[in-house]
Image (cartoon, rainbow, N blue to C red; front, side):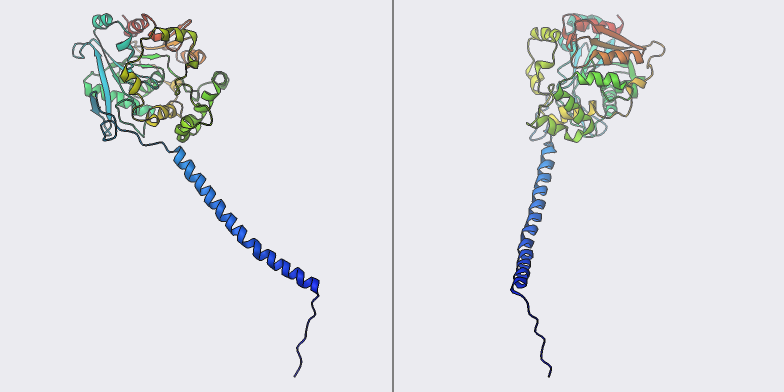
Length: 375
């Protein structure tokens, strides 16, 4: 019987083989654990990021956990409620009927004609005005599908349910003024006249020359530049950006006085202060559905370009007015001048040494009202 062959292995070779075996077996466990740790870590980061960018649910007015309903409301086509306040002479005897659109971080209680116009003038001209809470503000239900067009349709439905007739005036201030462009686009046949008071401008409207838009944009505070970039390019991050503590958020949302020009500060010095409703109601349903969605809508991608609109009053049966201060740091005058040049049918009123709040200066609300109504 043949004997087996015995191979001689050196001690050095045996030690080398043993080390390799030990090395491979000992490194397998840490690699597996490391991968698991990475998966857990990134899962945690993603979960945190999702929760951080997810806004809290709104506190709907009239719900068990929400603020009470204190003003009249109408029920809209999609089931939402729109809250409103009427002022002036009764609509049944009014000669002029005006729907007022409030600005950013305001509500229906911020009606220029109810707070700054002369009651005697309102009575003499027989003016009726109604202001309403835009969706998510005050006591109006949020609208998760809100667009510039939907706001125009809300305004039209408000007019119909209140029985304002086939035509009415629409006036908006600041961001409310910006959104009035949608009325000129979608319901021009219902308008008797339009007023835009220091209207905010979306820097991304396609017709703006890049040199003008970039120049104006670069003059803004850095924090506001970033806020608007986020609102335009990453609207789903708007809430997170304006509530995080790492970087400065919107100076307007934080109610900083740094944005106000000297003429504005002079106007503010004469204010008697806001009412309790003006202070508390704008954000009472939550900042996301009021402020943050407002930013995303106003500075988002619009479905139309206002500078391509046609004259809604070709036979001079009405008129469109834009009022702008030359020292407005919220809405730079250069953009407003360009819009007035592109749309020559607009009656453009530029005020010298005037800021964003010029409409509240003594007698200015009366002047705006009489000019709009042609009296």
